[in-house]
Image (cartoon, rainbow, N blue to C red; front, side):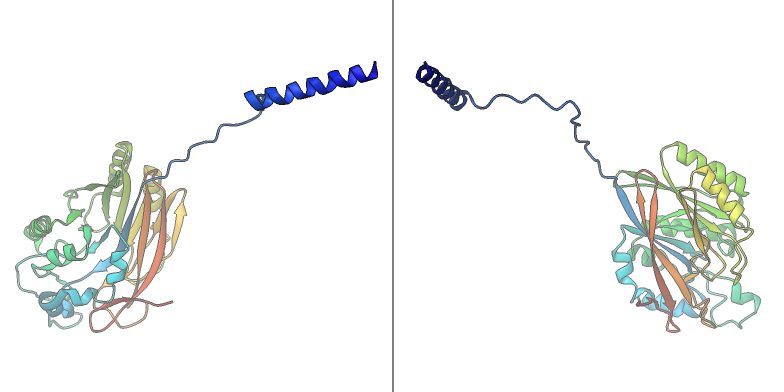
Length: 314
């Protein structure tokens, strides 16, 4: 009897092995708590080199006219990292002769700027996608000077935004699927901050990422006390980043909510060398993402008496 039971047991085991060989192992039921992997989509981004105040007159006029590329000779690597650049153009482009070149320091003529007619091509050659015209020198040659500036920039393919007296256009461009809007706040003859905030809000509502250039503050002052409420207004309106100019010195920066604010980048191309505060500026490599977030990498720069602006090696 025991032999019979052993024979039957071995027979069933053999048949089970043959069944598994022919049909494969038994199907396992899925685990009840298993999760489906989530697909991650990368955000689009654009890299913008943001710089501060730029002057192409006064003691820099001769270089700008004859060999403007020399002014950028040791900052080429900065521009190569970006998809395009943006900065504050501190004066008009006209065919009028310079009044500030060779003028006495401190005289009225020393503060009246006009840039040579090749300036727009110089900016285009160094990958400037747009420049801010909302500042206290853009009107040095009246409305004719502003109109002339826009004509030269448009002919060279360089965008522009800002101005004076309500004539403050927005520069819009689409890059890598990101809709960008550049808005200007000009404390010196521009529209009130509340109007600028409304413009920011409208651009944001249209699905655009908003970059603000704010020409504000007091020259050579490091205080941001009266600037912060305006920055908060722009942040609440939907700006992704606010870049300041006019003080000619580098000021602090902070995030207001999700909005990155740099209160002043100082000088980028200028003929101020009397101390380290004015002869040093800051360039930013901004990474703007399709969801409106922004991060910045800082590049301190030094303005040399020969006219060049050079990154400081760290």
